[in-house]
Amino acid sequence: MRTNIIKTTIMYVLVAILLIYVLFPFIWMVSSSFKIESEIRSVSPTLIPRTFTLENFRHVLHESYFLVYFRNSVVVSSITTFLSMVVAILAAYAVIRMSHVALFRSFAGGILISQLVPPVLLVMPLYVIMMKLRLLNTYWAMIVSYMTFGVPVCTWLLRGYFENIPREIEEAATVDGCGRLKVIMKIVLPVSAPGLLAASLCCFVLSWIEFLYAFTFVEKTVVRTLPPGLALYQGIWTINWGGLMAASVLTVVPVAISFVFFQRYLIEGLTVGSVKG
Amino acid sequence: MGESRTLSPMKLSSLIRMKIRSVSLEMRIRHRYLGWVLFILPAGAVLTILLLWPLVDVVWTSFQARNMLNLDRRGFVGLANFGSFFSDSLWWLALKNGLIWTVGSVAGEFFVGLGSALLLNQNLRGRVIFRSLVLIPWIVPIVVASILWRWMLNPDFGIVNVLLVKSGILESPVYWLGEVNTALYSCIFVNIWRSFPFYTIVFLAALRSIPPEETEAALIDGANSFQRFIYIMIPHLRYVSLVVIVLHVMWTFYHFDFVWLLTGGGPLNASEILPTLIYRTAFRYYDFGVASAMSVMMTVILGMLIFTYFKLIGGGSR
Image (cartoon, rainbow over all chains, first blue to last red; front, top):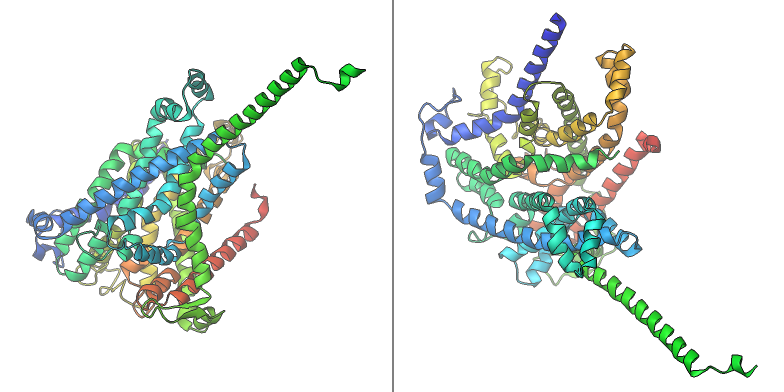
């Protein structure tokens, strides 16, 4: 009995250490975003701000380009997700239903292999393409390049979800006279709604946090998204750590909210593949 | 006799009807097939135009001189691009750093991930919440993580130095990201922090898929925790470990964002890895020819790494 209590205590202590390791940076970030400048740079900082202030947030929201970057990120991520999902739904459904045909199997393989290409390699020809199409410094440079991971990721995730739809339901609908598209819209999509949500979320978050293409293809502030915006913020205003913390907190908020609501699906998605072995 | 050689009108029309039916069946099959092909066409277009063609273009460019500032200077140069960085010590430094970065990160992530999975697999109260909390570093934007850690590792007022000095572990603050000896390893540390949760979740799922009968049988046989770990858990973790490690070796070797944002490859190239070197060559020196050659080489090297990995662990794990 006593060894059990000792063992359990050790477990909880280890868990506590783990949680501190994982969460402390965030807690520190949030705490600092509410501190005044002098406290941030103090040599004996405290976890809870001695002087609580909203000045950093006010500065970020009203006196910097943060809202511009935020808007751009929302637009780019949304359009990327929408387009990727439309393309992916069609492709995933076809791959599932035609898996007996070699063309579709090799297509599925191609989707997988495409993710072996390093972005740093791809950025060069994509830059030339964007330059020639005069898409540099526009939303489309990012949206189009994001499809290089948006479409494969969504297709692969949806493939997993669509596989689980019993064929009988689809066949019943076909017998009732539904063409392929109708079957998709009336049966497949509603049934796999959680899967659609998870895939869309995944695509949205991947676009939201993307840095390389956004940094390379866009220089104009008015089109820039949050990741390069934040990264360059630290170049110009290295002094304003409080503002930087506040901007970081605000950047994480959409991701955090989505995470809280949908972490179940995310974990499910990660576990589905790993239990197969 | 005459009957078998001439076709009566009825026989003829039934023959024609059969032919029409078979032709239209064929047309119908092809029509259905065509419909499905149309479904994968958009995705196929994305793959071909945005991935396949650029890939071919990069390989082609690696054998050309291509300077983006001076577009007139073009032409086939054979292996000259490859030669120019082969003899450059910076390339070999970046490669060495890249290997340290990759192996260090993946190993660290693996062990922290495995340890945390074993921990969270215990019957602790609130473990569902812990499981979700542990995932947080992974989903946060790399930009934010890099800003955060740059600040925490700051020598003047970064909390890490403050705590280490105050507790007496360090005598004076260390400029973790700015000193030649520590820059790369600090990057690795931050990367481990950010990426290990992926392993945790995957290992947790694998651990939970262990049939309880096996564990019960082992307990009945008197096995202690350590033995259970070796003989039951490890075999079940082998397959997922393989997949997750290979994926991360690839992702880490190619990773650009973190190192670029944490140190920019410095100080004095101490943390320069291949992706940052390639990017700098392409977009600071505008030498797309050499950069293309470098990235082709980087891909080949990764292929060799993964091949070696499979050889080392043996092909019998299936």
